[in-house]
Image (tube, rainbow over all chains, first blue to last red; front, side, top):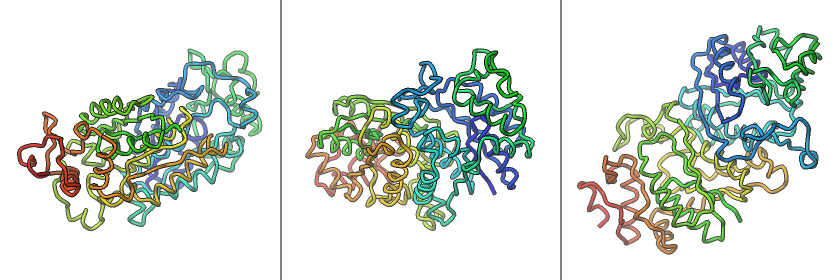
Amino acid sequence: MKAVVLASGGLDSTVTAAMAREEGATLYLLTIMYGQRHQIEIQRAQAIATWLQAAEHKILKLALHEFGGSALTGQGDVPKHRSNQERETGIPSTYVPARNTVFLSLALAYAEVVDADAIFIGANVLDYSGYPDCRPEFLQTFEAAARLGTKRGVNGKPIKIHAPLLLLSKAEIIQKGQALGVPFECTHSCYDPLDDGLACGRCDSCVIRLKGFRDAGCQDPVPYAADGSNLST
Amino acid sequence: MKAVVLASGGLDSTVTAAMAREEGATLYLLTIMYGQRHQIEIQRAQAIATWLQAAEHKILKLALHEFGGSALTGQGDVPKHRSNQERETGIPSTYVPARNTVFLSLALAYAEVVDADAIFIGANVLDYSGYPDCRPEFLQTFEAAARLGTKRGVNGKPIKIHAPLLLLSKAEIIQKGQALGVPFECTHSCYDPLDDGLACGRCDSCVIRLKGFRDAGCQDPVPYAADGSNLST
């Protein structure tokens, strides 16, 4: 089996890739540089690609920031807590418009070119902080569209979309990664790293990650800025 | 109504944009440069954006050619007739893997940012030369995925996908464009233009366009290379 894996360099996508490899897949990693601030993720993704012995690793630039619209692609401060508007809609300001739709469509194009049987994405519904494009019903419907809109689908070999972390807690994801020997020190989760690459320890993503390591009963090997450094112990 | 229109600079997408404007939409044009050879389309798309009085025109670079996989994104010759493999599968070698899925997903991201109500795409099923992602059932299913995967969808204001040319013949599209005053001389359809920008007159796209103008009973104002120049008269 050949599998395209959306690999951001983060914890979830790395565990996802390791699970795909465990299932015997030959890995085609796709990292999308979409103008986010944390370019450090790209370097980590390359280190992880080497560890995973991926057949290929494509890094695609995509100037999504030209559309504007999100704290993760713009130049503003990443909010550390939710606004009233976010509380009302349930969708955080770190939401990147249609991100998973865009990412899955690019993975689909890549999958058709390399004749891959599946796409793996690290979407997760329990730690889901209000992103509509992490929901199972979205993924199922996108898979149906992909079946109708591709050569492989027409030829009766539709590309399946796998989100093996979908129903796992962060602690379960970390335990799964441990069992597969994932080099957590290479993974990066912070939305708002310091200039030297240190994770902030305070953004939503850091808070969820640190709690996950605590719940899993182990230490996060990633270094944090001073005020977050002791949170996982 | 605000509408994002996928505007390639071609005949179909220009007529589509003119139809959206006719319906009273404020236009947000999106041109995706995906490494195709005919960069001339970009210049035409800009001229057309001016004619349409678009509120905004975004030109997004996307290095799809890094994936390879199609005559339209690669460096090889554009085939002038179909191979045995194409005849068997019904899908031409000019098929760009998952192109409309990718284009619609980028239009969806843009639509969320500008808070647009609709996306217009110039997909067409009758002149459909075997592209699975031009089929109505694909567009409907993508629309359903877009409803589930976006903030607007969650908030009960799903982004609709309009393909107003879907069931029209090329001659009908041309007649529609004539009625709306579309500057056909700015539109570009050739898959394989000469170095000076002249349309080849021989590729699938030129042949369909020229037949469309003949069937519509009018002259294509676009200049063609010598061996195709008299085909529309």
